[in-house]
Length: 345
Picture 1 (cartoon, helix red, strand yellow):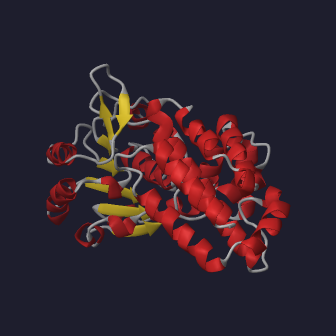
Picture 2 (cartoon, helix red, strand yellow):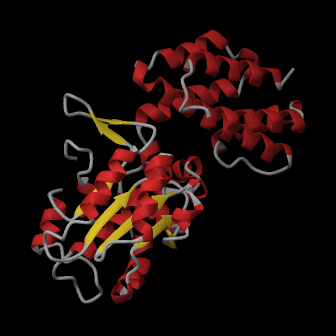
Picture 3 (cartoon, helix red, strand yellow):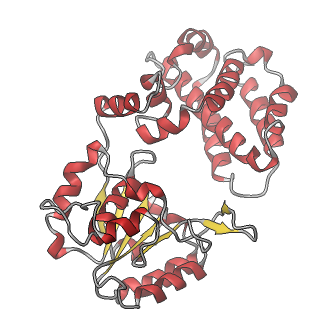
């Protein structure tokens, strides 16, 4: 990534994922009628970014293969692989600080999109296509979205905008309506399992259950530190009578300050999955995310009233929506733990 935050990550040099190859081939076969803007949508963690990157590589390749895919050998492909292609821009909610380090921010600022539109109006350096990726597109600020809309209304010739979003409903309708929507393919369970095993995961099925079948998300969740922390919280949920509010809250503060919101986000996600499994078991089904704790779930389920459980689940969803706002992660976690214990009397 370059200092302006618009460089291209090494992942752009990668090929599409196995479950994306047919779609990419189909899209590239219609290269002559290529739209000026694509909106790639689908659940988080299935590889939408990777799909958009494969398309970008193919559009910038100067000697594409017979099926339209990037050759990986021409000057254009080499520039992309080196994150130095002058006709490629990636816009993400990332800013570069004074030390040159990248940090995530909540919104893609309007200045980033204005700079992108100025770049789009310039003639291609390599004499071919120009490609701009915006990931995730729903993180554009209102001003940024309005700035992009002006460009999409009068798109510059030879420039393709690739917007990636797993929450397309948060995009202005005026933006979405000016893009051709592509639904990223979801892998089958067998494809996801095989891909994870190729990447050295020990328990693909358990990880996929946690990630709702999304293999890239599952691979990220395979981190031993993450799994260790998750296990500690799940064991605590399994014994609500013994839950120590202060002790579990201290686990939030044990993380570095800049990671505490992420730790809280994890706790909320784990609680959401746990409560969903309680509801499934209460209704006579099997747990989805926490199969290893089925016995504990079956013991707890009769003790919780469904209306109270559903209200608590909605409370968790509301709290997750507030994560971006200033808050005390420990206090939020402790309040959620207190309310969780109250479900069981």
